[in-house]
Amino acid sequence: MKNTAGLVLAAGAGRRFGQPKALVEYDGRSLLDRAVATLRDGGCRQVLAVLGAGAEQALSAAAEAFTPVLNRRWGQGLSTSLKAGLAAVPERYDGVVVTLVDLPRVEAEAVRRLITAAEEGVAIAVAVYDGVRGHPMYFAREHLGAIADTAVGDRGARDFLAANASLVREIPCPGDPLDIDTPADLAALTRPGAPRLAGLA
Figure (tube, rainbow, N blue to C red):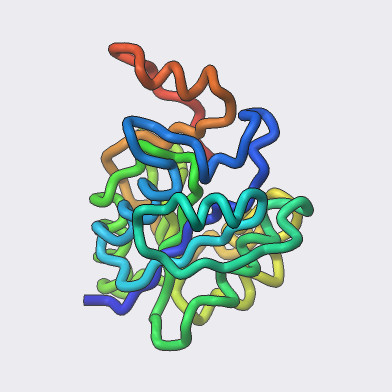
């Protein structure tokens, strides 16, 4: 079994939602707890979560165990959380599976498939849903520094992925890469036959 860590990016203020998404509840659990459990159940041996806005509340409310990473620069974009999280991954791990806190329908099976790909020698694996790239993503340790160096603003790892396309393996995954940005998005999940929301290209 690959020695893999998990990383949840959960530092944003959730301005369009009206509160930090780490604190938002869906189906009786916070989005943070759901993301942590998904990574753990998928095979990540240690899960780290980058917190920023509402960090104290998120820590006090969390039911799942994780290693907190504080990002005081969360207001400067997603990439600051990615940098902080990657820097905090302990050296003993061969790689890390990264996901976002606001993707409640990402499944543990997606994490398992990425880790399986890593065990087969894949250095960068990206979950794909009906041909569309999304989260989670797996990054081998040897690339973490370069990913952090190229992460700018809210682009996260996109520039690194574009520059290293030959290293990327797309992994078809079950689940739904919906992105909860507003209360209306969340409300849509409770309706029978709720449609898929936009994924991450």
